[in-house]
Length: 218
Image (cartoon, rainbow, N blue to C red; front, side, top):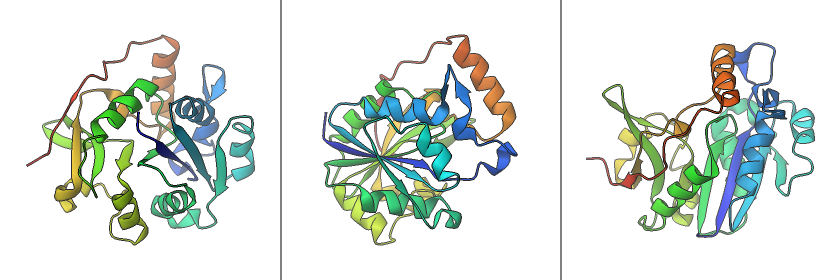
C-alpha cells in the first residue's frame, strides 16, 4: 500500500444531536471516535492526524493511548473546511492524503484499503472519492484521497473538499470509485440515525464487499 497521511475530522459541534457529542457515543463498548481512529491507525504505512475543536479535551481523552497525532483547530467554528485545511497543513509529506469525518460507523479498514488501491493509478492533481448511484443520482461519499498536488491545491484555496457539489464543480479532478457499499455513505447526524446504526452494529450485520471498480463520471 502507498504511504498515506490520514486526516480525521473530529472538530464539529454535533448540533443535530442535541446536547450529545456524537463522537463520544458508545459503539460496542468504545466511543465512536475511538473506534474510527483505532481502525485507521491500524492501516499499513499510515500516519494519522486527528483534528479536534469543540470539546477538545473530552475527545482527546478517548484516543490518548493511540499512536496518532492530535491537533486542535482554533478556527473550528468556521466550519469543516477550516479543519480540512488545518489537518492537511499539519500532516507530513506522503504519497497520498486520506481525509475522513470521524462519524462513519460502518467504515472499515478494508473499505479504506480498497479506496487507496483505486487511488494508486490516479492522475497527478486528482481526488479519489467513493461515488454511489443511489436514488437515481450520483452521490459522493467519504473518505476522499488526494494526491500531493491536490493537497497543495486545497491549501491554496483552490478546492473545497466539503462542497457537496464537488462532482459537478470539479469533474476533471475526480477519480471516481463507484460503489454500492453503505460504509462510505453512512454518518451519524441525528439521535435516530445513531439508534438505528447502533442496533445494526450490535446485531453484527454483514457488510457489502469492498471489491468495486473505478472510472470517471462523464
